[in-house]
Image 1 (cartoon, rainbow, N blue to C red):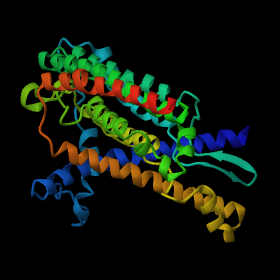
Image 2 (image 1 turned 180 degrees about the vertical axis):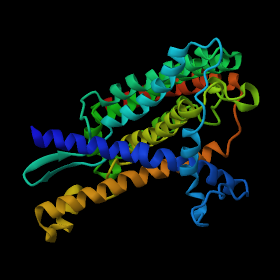
Image 3 (image 1 turned 180 degrees about the horizontal axis):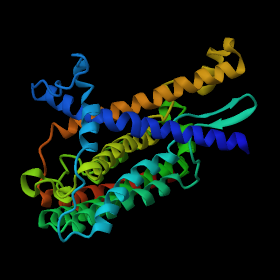
Image 4 (image 1 turned 30 degrees about the horizontal axis):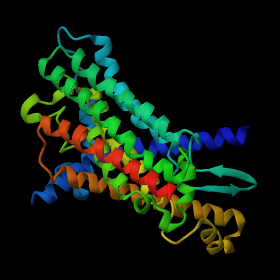
Length: 356
């Protein structure tokens, strides 16, 4: 009992530190630096410690110090309770949903079985969809409670867009569940130990549809209509400052990590290297003893998983700075008239193939 509790606490601390302590601040720097490189600019390069700049990596620290000293402003006429609650509703689901995403396989350390997932639920993807939908309320409440017309319009856009794409996003994964016969993400990851059973080969159309829907659900360009700086100032969080503003910002970045983790698990072999099974890794490190081999295999699998996650983060950043923002009617048309029918067609074709 104590060993299980300790294992769970360690996994929670690890995922929390990776998402909130590493990816969240570093993605702010990546967003600035990658956009600068793509636009032939220098990017973040001013913050320094003893004249050491390290290609702008001190900027996340400088941003954190600056934000902590800013005034937490609530505009006149705003609903203070919901204005304060909204950022929490946007940030918390982004963090919690990673609990069911496996970042490694199953191992035995000193006679104790270890699974590299915080909560191995048999309805893992349903859990993700349920919690991810809560962030919609945070965005809507943030826009409504600010007593600002532009914020309200941004919140309305966000609610329509996020709810619309949740329908298509859920249907795009039905084919994956049909192929693998499970909603448990650890089961799907284990099946993909065989390289030729990776989701990208089994459901190529499903991958394209899901990845597109996930970007739209996260309100990232070219689907950033709820923010649309040239139209709505900053959209639903126009009237936010200090840590509340950062919570919206962190929620968006952590959602990028979560989306990358889901895509990696469902379509790109989870924690597996191509043509390398967990048993092959344990045999490779057999000289280190059973426990040493398990530890080394864990390190390799975790590194492989987060390397894949980092690749998809880079891909989403590249898309964000490559494509121009769609018009709002184009966003809605894409979701309802193109992605949704294609998702239904994909389910139909998958069913026929499985039946045959």
